[in-house]
Length: 246
Image (cartoon, rainbow, N blue to C red; front, side):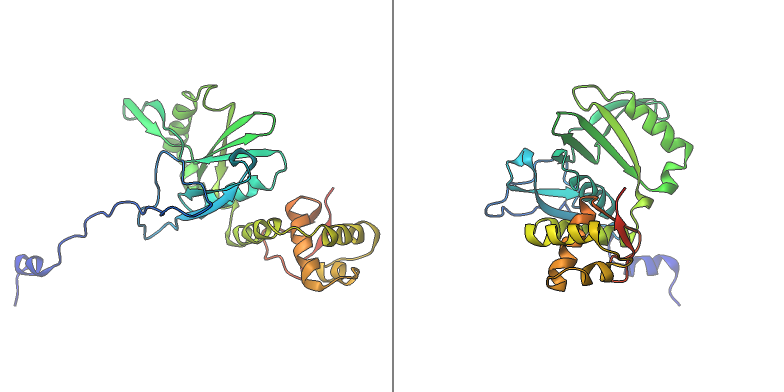
């Protein structure tokens, strides 16, 4: 019978922490511009990389790295706004005094949104369990106290629990269809939404003299542009309830 020390000797050595993954240059796509690469291996968080074009990048796609699916979903939600000019991630750290540790620490905001009027908003994303802790609230207060006007005009705390799987999946599909230009389909579906009777998305599509697949894509674009309303927390499909927004 082996003793405990012999058993320990037979165990493999702990794996060394591997460096963050680096995305190779992509032809026609601007490289990642963040100050911190979050693409480390994780058993609990799904890292996300995406190529996104904004007016700030001159309409050219640029590589973005996100800490997780929630941060990516927040970015896609913001990108739906016609007032958004630019998106930045993994920013220069904000140096702040941590009252708990009694020393200076660094914090990298998840996102910074720049709007067409020049207004800039830094975004802090955490899950609900973390946000409910008093120590997290103290940490946030410490960080926000050191955010200056040259970094952002204001800050926003976002609860990641608001972006459940169905919501994230809807945002990804909406974003994909927003990259497809079909002004004829958009106009036909919007006109039907304003002038005909319907309850479900399938009813609205049936009122359009156009291929179903084009109407479906147009409807998702209109939802993304807040022309149409639907429950974003359920998977958007033909049986989904839809209505004019507002």
